[in-house]
Amino acid sequence: SKGGPKRLLIMMSNTGGGHKASAEAIRDAFREKHGDEYQIDIVDMWKDYTPWPFNKIPDTYSFLVKHSILWRMSYEMTQPKWFHVPYLAFVGVFMRSGMHRAFDKYQPDSVVSVHPLMQHVPLGVLKQRIHSGAMKPVNFSTVVTDFTTCHNTWFHTSATRCFVPTEECRGLARQNGLVDKQLIQRGLPIRPLFARGLPNRRAMRRRLGLDPGLPAILLVGGGEGMGALEATVSKLGQELGPIAQVVVICGRNKRLFDKLSTSPPPGGMPVKATGFVNNIHEWMGACDCIITKAGPGTIAEALISGLPILLNGNVPCQEEGNIPFVIQNGVGTFETDPAKIASIIRSWVSGHPEEQEAFAKMAQRSKELGRPKAVYEIMEDLKQLTDEPDFEFGPARAALRTQLATSKSS
Ligand code: UDP
Image (cartoon, rainbow, N blue to C red; front, side, top):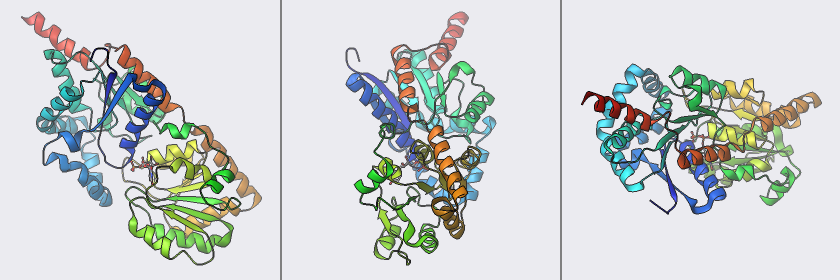
C-alpha cells in the first residue's frame, strides 16, 4: 500500500465487552493524534474468519462463565504449554485459511492482538507467509487486557512486543519466556474520552439530570449482567433512603431496566436506570463511587475517574486477581451480599468523619492509580513499530531463522 495510509490489523474476539473496547480505544487514539495517516482495521477473527463450528466457540463463553465449574476446567486445563500448544495447533488447522484471507484482505503493515487466543495461530500463519515471501516482514504486538491473572496463552515468545499493564503481568510474561526487551509496561488501553477531563461531579450530575447535591452511587450491571442487582438496589434504598441517589447501568439486562423504571425501591432513594450507555465516562464523572463486577476495563475506567470501587462479583479465573488488585491498592473492597454491600456504601457516603476520611483517601488513591494516558503511549509505541519495524524479535525473525536454516542445508 505505497502512498496510502499505513495499516494496522487489530485482532480481537468479542468474549465479554473488554477486548473490543480495548481495540477501539487504540483505534480512537490513532485517529485523534494521526488522523488518516493510519488505517486501523479491527477484526473479530473467531466470528468472521473461522469456519463452523469453531466460530461458535466465543458464544459458549457467556454460557461457560455462568457455569463456573466448566469455565474453570477449560481455563485451568489450557494453562500449561504442553496442553495449549498442541491444542491451538489443532484448532489452527481449521483457522489457518481464514487467517490467510484476513491478511490478504487487510494487507497490514503491523499486526496487534488484544485477545488471549490470538497469538499462536496468527503468529504461525505470519511466520509462514513472511518465510514464503507472501507478505513483507511485519511486527506482531500483544496488548494484554487483564491486570494480574492473565492466562498463559497471552504470552508467546515470537511476539515482537507484549504490552503488560502491571508488574504481576510482567512477571507472568517472563515466566512464559519473554524477555524484558520484548515487554512494555503502560496500563490498559482505555477510551481516550476518559483522558479528556470533565467538569466537577456536581456539574456533571446537573448535566445528566441527577440531583447535584446528593451523593451518587453508580451500579454497573452491564455486560453479562452479573450480581444480585435488584436486591442490591432495594437494600441500598433501605439503608440510605433519600440521602443518596443511585444510577443503575443495566446494559443488556432489559428485565432489570424495566423493573427499576416501573417500581423504584421504597424509602425515597432516587434511582436512575439506563440501558447500555456510550457515555459511561460521564456517569463515572457524576458519581462518587462504583459497584461493579471485577471487569478489568471497568476497573481501569473507575480508577481514571477517581472512584472507590466495590466489587460485587467476578468472572471466574481471569478476573479473580482483580479483587486483591483493588484491595491491596487501597481503592476499594469486595462483597457479594446485597445487605452488606448497602452497609459498606452507607459508611462510604454518609459514615462517621473517620469513615468519610477513609473514603476520600480511597478516591484519591484511585485517581493516582488511574492511567488515562496509557492508551496514547501504547498507540505511539505501536506507531513506531509500524513505521520502523523491529526485527530483533517477532515473527519475521522466526521466519528468517527458518530461511537461514534452509539456505544452509541446501
Ligand atoms: N460499558 C459501556 N456501557 C455500558 C456498560 C459497559 O461502555 O452500558 C463498557 C465499560 O465501560 C467497559 C466494558 O463495557 O469498557 C466492559 O469491559 P470489562 O473489561 O469491564 O468487562 P467484560 O465485559 O470484558 O467482562
